[in-house]
Amino acid sequence: MIEHNHDKLISAIFITFSGNCKKALSFYQTCFGGQLQFETFEKELQGYEEIPVISGSLISDRIIIHGSDLVHNEGRKIGNYISIFLHCKNTDDRQELIEAIMHNPLANSNEFAHDSFKAVYTNEKLEFDKKSFFANNENEQKLIEVTDAFDVRWVLGIQ
Image 1 (cartoon, rainbow, N blue to C red):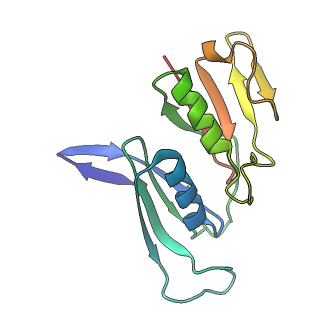
Image 2 (image 1 turned 180 degrees about the vertical axis):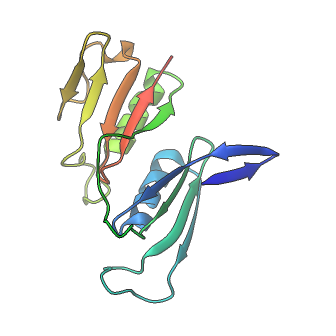
């Protein structure tokens, strides 16, 4: 999706969710701030627990995310071929985002998402760190990847 802003075209992210678009975009609003907008069906549809979102948007100063609950005929497939990159101001900014993104919005407490993980990219290798989110020398790493409770992969980078 593309937003028109002061004669500039700005790219955005579009994510297909599996019936939880409203919950996911609301969660991302707690991470990034911004304004939410949803267009939904007027009544419940067979096969959906809630009224599905036709089109939803989160527009913040940091990121624009569009989403929908409408899945292609072949179904939603999760893969490791795409991640969302966010440029962070510094290591403190990145750490705040890691904690926000890895929070589990599906739980009733402030626990991390069950299946979320963090990958730390180093010059020599890629290290996966399942539950220990504070790896040695992490502040020196250019890229850190986290996966949230909605199976969305985020790469957080600093210069």
